[in-house]
Image 1 (cartoon, rainbow, N blue to C red):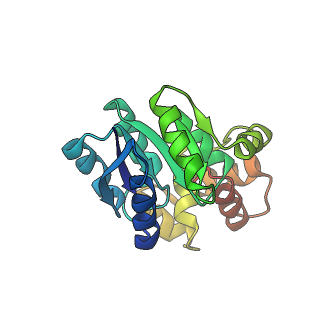
Image 2: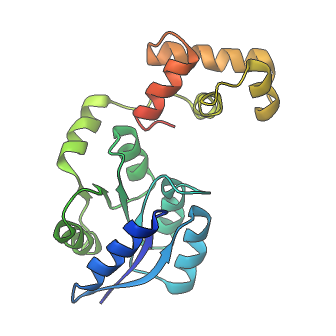
Length: 199
């Protein structure tokens, strides 16, 4: 029996996944969490073989939790609505065994779980092709942090206070990110980076 943990913040989706996967003879859903901050503690308590993680969760993201679970020997599959190339790259770097979009049939998901447990990498083919076309994330960690903070339209002064940086440092990081993304301003740069899954 393959033991599965599901991390999904939408209750109806989480319940449907658990019900459908539970109908498979060799799969057992042993835990369900709605908040990213609960993933590692729940996995530590129930020791699943596989964790199905959504990316955008309240609290910690599924991508952030993936590395911890991978280090603990748990097979991680990212299951998301957002098939962004940057997310795929970050998931693979975190040790995820697979990356699938939510609109696939449940039979494909069940098959992907079995294949991942058997040691295979399972990636949505269209997304893999898009990731190769998109290339790598050109932003540094600090540029990503500043752009993420800038998504809400904060002023340079507000960003500097929030990030504990000088205003000139914030300007430099934003300017660099704008140049690397070939956009006209920080809002466009942040939107493009978010669209590509770099944030």
